[in-house]
Image (cartoon, rainbow, N blue to C red):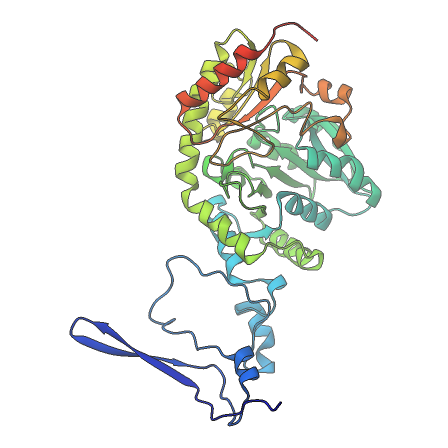
Length: 433
């Protein structure tokens, strides 16, 4: 069967009516087809020229899913690398739109989007450290970070020391001649300890060439501008508050140092730990409402923390906004508000804690955090359980008790959440395990 060949027109048009005006809207193809070009080829290649880009722009950046980009001249290839796009792994408008917004919020020199929070952490660490270097990490720390510090980095000849989370003096005492990275979290996962960023940076300044990295996922760029305290690199799991809707997995690294941002960016291109354009679009959508969401998260969290602190079946509440929090004054100094995470210990031990989290109804028993809906979890059984490689002894030594509960407070009405918590607390038995 022969291919259907016919005369090819490179233009199409239709009329658009606006009141008394009839306008002709024309579309011209990007290709100058030869006469006789087949329908098969037209189906594959037909594409109108982008209209009106010098007159208008989309209010919301379009999703740029193209993986490769046509260039006009071979000699312009290097110019396209710096001023345009060549290949999706090297950069596209969607991921750069999200990175640009976060960079402005953090006040950085550059930001990079990653396929997950762990991709951001792992790529950044491996891009900066080499065999013979020494890095200091907090304990406790996010379980994924704990695993890479304990198991992965030593395989590459990188020495790791873990110190009490947010104890700046402990960092100072752990310094060695080969210390290259000081890594922090604030507020910490899961106990919401607060690291004094100013003091942390001052310790790093005593070490020639030392780089400070801080995971600020629990705070978000809206509530804590980490780089403004002199930190070199801030990390976020955009899966949490930045994305904000529990429907995208992403991460970001933002640096105040343009050389660091460039070098890690080059390493990321080789690792391939990039974010997809559609996911970048979802991250940017989340950024647009993040200030409003964080205000509501924080308001709800304060009301619920105050309720829990007075409840007889709750033995301790950890929330940076409460005066009872050990680092409350530090949080007041460096945070705009105190966020949507509340951590507390229920009386009665392991079985009581399990009964509690399994008795909520409105609140979801699930890992992760930072979405519009409320999530609750039991760290000793879930995120910091023995399956992570953390022994029960190690877990308890860092303050993650059998009765500890991590609560990501959503945007529901606070009184409805308190009613659900009350119902679940009433189900608990106060006998120790």
